[in-house]
Length: 113
Image (cartoon, rainbow, N blue to C red; front, side, top):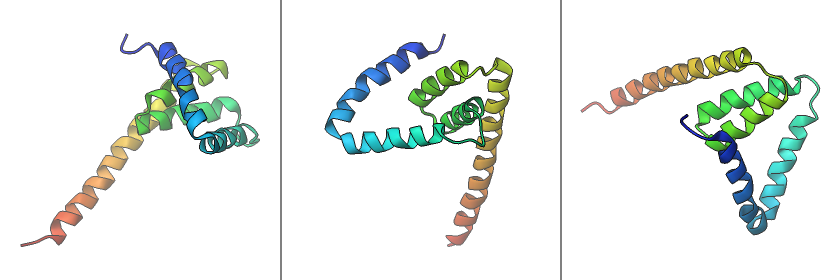
């Protein structure tokens, strides 16, 4: 096992209290944003969590991975659905690396001696 994700999520939730105490306005706003997402009607909770998990992978956020993996499990996602969503994240990261490689080549070319 690479990580104990249940511990990661528990530690995140435990440690978040200090941030909430020292900057309650930001934490309240953040929670409000997440609450607003749950009130949407176009996507069901499982789909939102699959998207969130894929985005968590692309942003390399362990806390997000643990949180959204747990939420996807709770929402009834299957391992096949999670794997397919993560496959999209892999493809997107490869695509982003390609696009930024093109940008880097363009930048390099603009600095001709």
